[in-house]
Length: 249
Image (cartoon, rainbow, N blue to C red; front, side, top):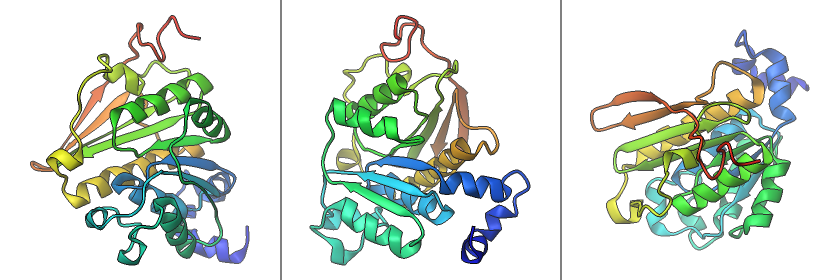
């Protein structure tokens, strides 16, 4: 590790349970981030700043004026640019020591599984249930840890799925996969709420990659920002889950 890297990452290297070994593990790690909206903006920026060596960004969308209220990785000058390109430029300006790969399209099942297989952790920062379920299914099949987050109005949640554990996967939480979930386009969202949840996803991803602390595996973290209340619910694996249940291999 160079002197510049030691200085750049010095504040987290000072952590007793992190040290240089933790920083080196981050430098050798690969995180896949699906979605460069509000959640992905905060998660990607903190993972880049923390020194995760390789980031792969997936998003099919372009930057729109309505995104700028909460998607802080993009700028006004980026309107109509692909989000992955805008995000890449911001991340490399923040930390030129990392590698950033971009995929400017929606992935089919085979492509998603291939990308998940190549990652050490997957950050689900998308904004719709079908994509979340597809990411969850790919992670469970391949055995790649997943950090999933969601936010709407003044509410948010974070869950970590760890291979081989008894904690619930995201599909366990949504036993009726046909449920018609609301979106921010329909109901709105307060800008900092997605930043809070995305930042927590970055924290959990770093913990997954380095072994620091205890992750939210098997625990669903819920935020009610209107009351500024946090709740943690223990969530166990659903034996009949079509993704991680006893009948699945």
